[in-house]
Amino acid sequence: QKEVWAQLKDEPTISKDGTHVELVANIGTPDDVQGVLNNGGEGVGLYRTEFLYMGNSDFPTEDQQFEAYKSVLEQMGDKPVVVRTLDIGGDKELSYLDLPKEMNPFLGFRAVRLCLERDDIFRTQLRALLRASTYGNLKIMFPMIATLNEFRDAKALLLEEKENLTSEGVNVSDDIEIGIMVEIPSTAVIARQFAKEVDFFSIGTNDLIQYTMAADRMNERVSYLYQPYHPAILNLVNNVIEAAHAEGKWAGMCGEMAGDSIAIPILLGLGLDEFSMSATSILPARTQIKDLSKEDLASYKDELLSMSTADEVEAFIREKTNQ
Ligand code: PEP
Ligand code: MG
Image (cartoon, rainbow, N blue to C red; front, side):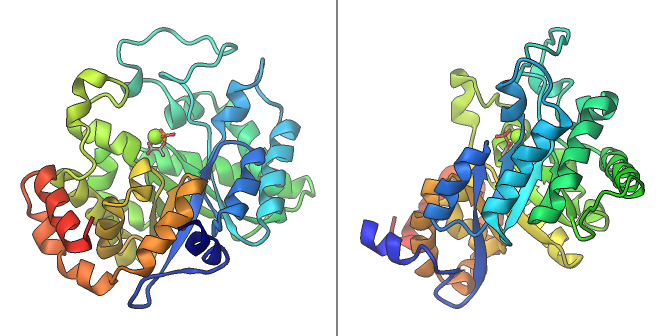
Protein backbone atom coordinates (compact mmCIF):
# COMPACT_ATOMS: atom_id res chain seq x y z
CA GLN A 1 0.00 0.00 0.00
CA LYS A 2 2.71 2.47 1.00
CA GLU A 3 4.54 1.75 -2.27
CA VAL A 4 1.45 2.45 -4.36
CA TRP A 5 1.09 5.76 -2.55
CA ALA A 6 4.73 6.69 -3.03
CA GLN A 7 4.45 6.13 -6.78
CA LEU A 8 1.60 8.61 -6.92
CA LYS A 9 3.45 11.35 -5.05
CA ASP A 10 4.39 13.39 -8.09
CA GLU A 11 1.37 12.46 -10.19
CA PRO A 12 -1.64 14.68 -10.76
CA THR A 13 -4.93 13.40 -9.34
CA ILE A 14 -6.94 11.97 -12.21
CA SER A 15 -10.10 9.86 -12.02
CA LYS A 16 -10.41 6.61 -13.98
CA ASP A 17 -12.28 8.48 -16.71
CA GLY A 18 -9.81 11.35 -16.96
CA THR A 19 -11.07 14.17 -14.74
CA HIS A 20 -8.38 16.13 -12.92
CA VAL A 21 -9.11 17.36 -9.40
CA GLU A 22 -6.74 19.21 -7.07
CA LEU A 23 -5.69 17.46 -3.87
CA VAL A 24 -4.30 20.07 -1.53
CA ALA A 25 -3.57 20.31 2.17
CA ASN A 26 -4.68 22.10 5.31
CA ILE A 27 -1.82 23.68 7.26
CA GLY A 28 -1.41 25.80 10.38
CA THR A 29 2.22 26.96 10.26
CA PRO A 30 5.12 27.30 7.78
CA ASP A 31 6.62 24.17 9.39
CA ASP A 32 3.76 22.12 7.97
CA VAL A 33 4.73 22.81 4.35
CA GLN A 34 7.39 20.12 4.07
CA GLY A 35 4.81 17.51 5.01
CA VAL A 36 2.52 18.76 2.27
CA LEU A 37 5.25 18.42 -0.35
CA ASN A 38 6.38 15.03 0.98
CA ASN A 39 2.83 13.77 0.65
CA GLY A 40 2.32 14.97 -2.90
CA GLY A 41 0.08 17.96 -2.14
CA GLU A 42 -0.75 20.02 -5.22
CA GLY A 43 -1.08 23.13 -3.11
CA VAL A 44 -2.36 24.45 0.20
CA GLY A 45 -6.15 24.68 0.32
CA LEU A 46 -6.42 26.12 3.82
CA TYR A 47 -3.74 27.93 5.76
CA ARG A 48 -5.27 28.54 9.18
CA THR A 49 -3.50 31.77 10.15
CA GLU A 50 -4.85 31.90 13.69
CA PHE A 51 -2.06 29.63 14.96
CA LEU A 52 0.38 32.50 14.57
CA TYR A 53 -1.87 34.59 16.83
CA MET A 54 -2.58 31.85 19.36
CA GLY A 55 1.09 31.01 19.81
CA ASN A 56 1.97 34.62 20.59
CA SER A 57 1.76 36.78 23.73
CA ASP A 58 0.56 39.76 21.69
CA PHE A 59 -0.77 40.40 18.19
CA PRO A 60 1.88 39.31 15.68
CA THR A 61 3.33 42.34 13.91
CA GLU A 62 2.94 42.97 10.20
CA ASP A 63 6.57 41.92 9.65
CA GLN A 64 6.20 38.75 11.69
CA GLN A 65 3.17 37.79 9.64
CA PHE A 66 4.84 38.76 6.38
CA GLU A 67 7.74 36.41 7.15
CA ALA A 68 5.39 33.50 7.87
CA TYR A 69 3.26 34.00 4.75
CA LYS A 70 6.33 34.54 2.56
CA SER A 71 7.90 31.36 3.90
CA VAL A 72 4.84 29.28 3.02
CA LEU A 73 4.52 30.84 -0.44
CA GLU A 74 8.20 30.45 -1.27
CA GLN A 75 8.29 26.83 -0.15
CA MET A 76 5.24 26.03 -2.28
CA GLY A 77 6.74 27.63 -5.40
CA ASP A 78 4.08 28.12 -8.08
CA LYS A 79 1.60 25.82 -6.37
CA PRO A 80 -1.53 27.61 -5.09
CA VAL A 81 -1.71 28.66 -1.44
CA VAL A 82 -5.13 29.61 -0.07
CA VAL A 83 -4.69 31.70 3.05
CA ARG A 84 -7.65 32.16 5.34
CA THR A 85 -7.76 35.46 7.18
CA LEU A 86 -8.01 35.44 10.95
CA ASP A 87 -10.69 33.11 12.32
CA ILE A 88 -10.52 33.96 15.98
CA GLY A 89 -13.02 34.71 18.72
CA GLY A 90 -15.81 32.59 20.04
CA ASP A 91 -14.22 29.38 21.24
CA LYS A 92 -10.75 30.28 19.91
CA GLU A 93 -9.60 32.77 22.52
CA LEU A 94 -6.56 35.05 22.50
CA SER A 95 -5.13 35.84 25.93
CA TYR A 96 -4.29 39.40 24.85
CA LEU A 97 -7.69 40.16 23.30
CA ASP A 98 -10.21 40.85 25.99
CA LEU A 99 -13.63 39.89 24.71
CA PRO A 100 -16.80 39.60 26.78
CA LYS A 101 -17.96 36.04 27.49
CA GLU A 102 -20.69 34.94 25.15
CA MET A 103 -23.64 32.64 25.66
CA ASN A 104 -23.15 31.02 22.22
CA PRO A 105 -19.56 31.52 21.09
CA PHE A 106 -20.08 29.59 17.84
CA LEU A 107 -22.85 32.02 16.95
CA GLY A 108 -21.02 35.03 18.25
CA PHE A 109 -18.46 37.69 17.62
CA ARG A 110 -15.72 35.92 15.70
CA ALA A 111 -13.75 35.63 12.47
CA VAL A 112 -14.70 38.17 9.82
CA ARG A 113 -17.24 39.72 12.19
CA LEU A 114 -14.44 40.62 14.56
CA CYS A 115 -12.07 41.62 11.75
CA LEU A 116 -14.55 44.06 10.23
CA GLU A 117 -15.09 45.79 13.58
CA ARG A 118 -11.44 45.66 14.64
CA ASP A 119 -10.15 46.68 11.24
CA ASP A 120 -6.81 47.70 12.76
CA ILE A 121 -6.11 44.00 13.39
CA PHE A 122 -7.49 43.04 9.99
CA ARG A 123 -5.58 45.66 8.00
CA THR A 124 -2.29 44.52 9.53
CA GLN A 125 -2.91 40.99 8.34
CA LEU A 126 -4.07 42.10 4.90
CA ARG A 127 -0.96 44.24 4.43
CA ALA A 128 1.28 41.33 5.43
CA LEU A 129 -0.50 39.07 2.96
CA LEU A 130 -0.34 41.59 0.14
CA ARG A 131 3.37 42.17 0.71
CA ALA A 132 3.95 38.41 0.61
CA SER A 133 1.86 37.99 -2.55
CA THR A 134 4.77 38.42 -4.97
CA TYR A 135 6.57 35.37 -3.51
CA GLY A 136 4.21 32.71 -4.82
CA ASN A 137 0.68 31.86 -5.91
CA LEU A 138 -1.46 33.47 -3.22
CA LYS A 139 -5.23 33.25 -2.90
CA ILE A 140 -7.04 34.89 0.01
CA MET A 141 -10.30 33.78 1.60
CA PHE A 142 -12.50 35.17 4.32
CA PRO A 143 -13.99 32.88 7.00
CA MET A 144 -17.54 32.77 8.39
CA ILE A 145 -19.11 34.88 5.68
CA ALA A 146 -22.87 35.11 6.33
CA THR A 147 -23.84 38.00 4.05
CA LEU A 148 -22.69 39.51 0.78
CA ASN A 149 -22.04 42.80 2.52
CA GLU A 150 -19.45 41.15 4.77
CA PHE A 151 -17.64 39.91 1.70
CA ARG A 152 -17.86 43.30 0.01
CA ASP A 153 -16.59 45.11 3.11
CA ALA A 154 -13.70 42.68 3.62
CA LYS A 155 -12.74 42.89 -0.04
CA ALA A 156 -12.92 46.70 0.05
CA LEU A 157 -10.46 46.79 2.96
CA LEU A 158 -8.15 44.45 1.07
CA LEU A 159 -8.25 46.65 -2.04
CA GLU A 160 -7.74 49.76 0.09
CA GLU A 161 -4.59 48.31 1.66
CA LYS A 162 -3.42 47.25 -1.80
CA GLU A 163 -3.76 50.87 -2.95
CA ASN A 164 -1.91 52.08 0.13
CA LEU A 165 0.97 49.68 -0.43
CA THR A 166 1.21 50.52 -4.09
CA SER A 167 1.38 54.23 -3.34
CA GLU A 168 4.12 53.47 -0.80
CA GLY A 169 6.04 51.86 -3.65
CA VAL A 170 5.59 48.27 -2.46
CA ASN A 171 5.10 45.57 -5.08
CA VAL A 172 1.84 43.65 -4.84
CA SER A 173 0.69 40.82 -7.10
CA ASP A 174 -2.08 41.77 -9.52
CA ASP A 175 -3.76 38.40 -9.75
CA ILE A 176 -4.68 37.38 -6.24
CA GLU A 177 -7.95 35.43 -6.27
CA ILE A 178 -10.32 36.50 -3.50
CA GLY A 179 -12.77 33.93 -2.22
CA ILE A 180 -14.85 32.92 0.75
CA MET A 181 -15.38 29.96 2.99
CA VAL A 182 -18.89 28.59 2.80
CA GLU A 183 -19.58 27.43 6.33
CA ILE A 184 -22.84 29.19 7.10
CA PRO A 185 -26.06 27.88 5.53
CA SER A 186 -27.26 31.35 4.45
CA THR A 187 -24.26 31.60 2.17
CA ALA A 188 -24.64 28.09 0.80
CA VAL A 189 -28.29 28.80 0.00
CA ILE A 190 -27.58 31.98 -1.99
CA ALA A 191 -24.29 30.76 -3.44
CA ARG A 192 -25.59 31.83 -6.86
CA GLN A 193 -25.55 35.47 -5.81
CA PHE A 194 -22.12 35.14 -4.17
CA ALA A 195 -20.68 33.42 -7.23
CA LYS A 196 -21.03 36.62 -9.27
CA GLU A 197 -18.66 38.43 -6.91
CA VAL A 198 -16.19 35.93 -5.45
CA ASP A 199 -13.37 34.24 -7.35
CA PHE A 200 -13.84 30.90 -5.59
CA PHE A 201 -15.60 29.03 -2.81
CA SER A 202 -14.07 26.74 -0.22
CA ILE A 203 -16.72 24.79 1.66
CA GLY A 204 -15.94 24.53 5.36
CA THR A 205 -17.98 21.50 6.30
CA ASN A 206 -16.74 21.35 9.90
CA ASP A 207 -18.83 24.42 10.59
CA LEU A 208 -21.39 24.03 7.80
CA ILE A 209 -22.52 20.71 9.30
CA GLN A 210 -22.81 22.09 12.83
CA TYR A 211 -24.80 25.12 11.69
CA THR A 212 -27.07 23.18 9.35
CA MET A 213 -27.83 20.42 11.85
CA ALA A 214 -27.78 22.79 14.86
CA ALA A 215 -25.38 20.36 16.54
CA ASP A 216 -22.31 21.76 18.30
CA ARG A 217 -19.23 20.18 16.71
CA MET A 218 -17.60 19.84 20.16
CA ASN A 219 -20.56 18.36 22.03
CA GLU A 220 -20.50 14.56 22.39
CA ARG A 221 -24.14 14.46 23.46
CA VAL A 222 -25.30 15.65 20.05
CA SER A 223 -22.54 14.14 17.93
CA TYR A 224 -25.04 11.65 16.48
CA LEU A 225 -26.62 14.62 14.69
CA TYR A 226 -23.33 15.73 13.21
CA GLN A 227 -23.94 13.95 9.89
CA PRO A 228 -21.68 14.77 6.94
CA TYR A 229 -23.70 12.57 4.60
CA HIS A 230 -27.05 14.06 5.58
CA PRO A 231 -28.92 14.88 2.36
CA ALA A 232 -29.31 18.49 3.55
CA ILE A 233 -25.54 18.84 3.58
CA LEU A 234 -25.21 17.21 0.18
CA ASN A 235 -27.83 19.54 -1.27
CA LEU A 236 -26.04 22.60 0.12
CA VAL A 237 -22.69 21.38 -1.19
CA ASN A 238 -24.22 20.69 -4.59
CA ASN A 239 -25.79 24.14 -4.65
CA VAL A 240 -22.41 25.76 -4.02
CA ILE A 241 -20.63 23.74 -6.71
CA GLU A 242 -23.35 24.40 -9.29
CA ALA A 243 -23.37 28.10 -8.47
CA ALA A 244 -19.61 28.34 -8.85
CA HIS A 245 -19.57 26.53 -12.17
CA ALA A 246 -22.45 28.60 -13.55
CA GLU A 247 -20.18 31.64 -13.16
CA GLY A 248 -17.01 29.91 -14.35
CA LYS A 249 -15.53 29.84 -10.82
CA TRP A 250 -14.09 26.91 -8.89
CA ALA A 251 -15.34 25.24 -5.73
CA GLY A 252 -13.22 23.46 -3.16
CA MET A 253 -13.78 21.96 0.25
CA CYS A 254 -11.50 22.30 3.26
CA GLY A 255 -13.53 20.65 6.01
CA GLU A 256 -12.70 17.14 7.26
CA MET A 257 -15.30 15.77 4.87
CA ALA A 258 -13.01 16.43 1.88
CA GLY A 259 -10.64 13.64 2.97
CA ASP A 260 -13.29 11.09 3.89
CA SER A 261 -13.41 7.95 1.73
CA ILE A 262 -17.23 7.80 1.68
CA ALA A 263 -17.54 11.52 0.91
CA ILE A 264 -14.88 11.59 -1.81
CA PRO A 265 -16.92 9.61 -4.39
CA ILE A 266 -19.98 11.76 -3.64
CA LEU A 267 -18.01 15.01 -4.02
CA LEU A 268 -16.29 13.83 -7.19
CA GLY A 269 -19.71 13.05 -8.66
CA LEU A 270 -21.03 16.48 -7.66
CA GLY A 271 -18.12 18.08 -9.50
CA LEU A 272 -15.99 19.43 -6.64
CA ASP A 273 -12.79 20.89 -8.11
CA GLU A 274 -10.47 20.98 -5.11
CA PHE A 275 -10.21 18.76 -2.02
CA SER A 276 -8.22 20.13 0.91
CA MET A 277 -7.31 17.70 3.68
CA SER A 278 -4.61 16.79 6.16
CA ALA A 279 -1.38 16.07 4.29
CA THR A 280 -1.34 12.40 5.25
CA SER A 281 -4.74 11.84 3.62
CA ILE A 282 -3.62 13.05 0.18
CA LEU A 283 -1.98 9.90 -1.20
CA PRO A 284 -4.74 7.56 0.01
CA ALA A 285 -7.29 9.92 -1.56
CA ARG A 286 -5.34 10.07 -4.84
CA THR A 287 -5.20 6.27 -4.91
CA GLN A 288 -8.94 6.09 -4.34
CA ILE A 289 -9.82 8.70 -6.99
CA LYS A 290 -7.69 6.98 -9.63
CA ASP A 291 -10.12 4.05 -9.46
CA LEU A 292 -13.32 6.09 -9.50
CA SER A 293 -15.29 7.05 -12.59
CA LYS A 294 -16.57 10.59 -12.28
CA GLU A 295 -19.19 9.99 -14.94
CA ASP A 296 -20.64 6.98 -13.11
CA LEU A 297 -20.71 8.89 -9.84
CA ALA A 298 -22.29 11.93 -11.49
CA SER A 299 -25.10 9.72 -12.75
CA TYR A 300 -26.10 9.00 -9.11
CA LYS A 301 -26.45 12.69 -8.30
CA ASP A 302 -30.23 13.12 -8.46
CA GLU A 303 -30.80 9.89 -6.57
CA LEU A 304 -28.37 10.87 -3.82
CA LEU A 305 -29.75 14.38 -3.47
CA SER A 306 -33.29 13.07 -3.05
CA MET A 307 -32.44 10.50 -0.40
CA SER A 308 -34.00 10.98 3.04
CA THR A 309 -31.28 9.97 5.50
CA ALA A 310 -27.52 9.93 5.92
CA ASP A 311 -27.63 6.16 6.45
CA GLU A 312 -29.25 5.67 3.07
CA VAL A 313 -26.55 7.78 1.43
CA GLU A 314 -23.75 5.92 3.16
CA ALA A 315 -25.14 2.46 2.36
CA PHE A 316 -25.61 3.44 -1.29
CA ILE A 317 -22.03 4.71 -1.65
CA ARG A 318 -20.55 1.73 0.19
CA GLU A 319 -22.31 -0.58 -2.20
CA LYS A 320 -21.36 1.31 -5.35
CA THR A 321 -17.70 1.69 -4.34
CA ASN A 322 -17.17 -1.63 -2.53
CA GLN A 323 -16.29 -0.12 0.82
C1 PEP B 1 -14.47 24.34 8.57
O1 PEP B 1 -15.26 24.97 9.27
O2 PEP B 1 -14.81 23.36 7.87
C2 PEP B 1 -13.05 24.72 8.51
C3 PEP B 1 -12.23 24.16 7.64
O3 PEP B 1 -12.60 25.64 9.40
P1 PEP B 1 -12.25 25.30 10.94
O4 PEP B 1 -12.24 23.80 11.08
O5 PEP B 1 -10.94 25.94 11.17
O6 PEP B 1 -13.39 25.96 11.63
MG1 MG C 1 -14.73 26.84 10.23
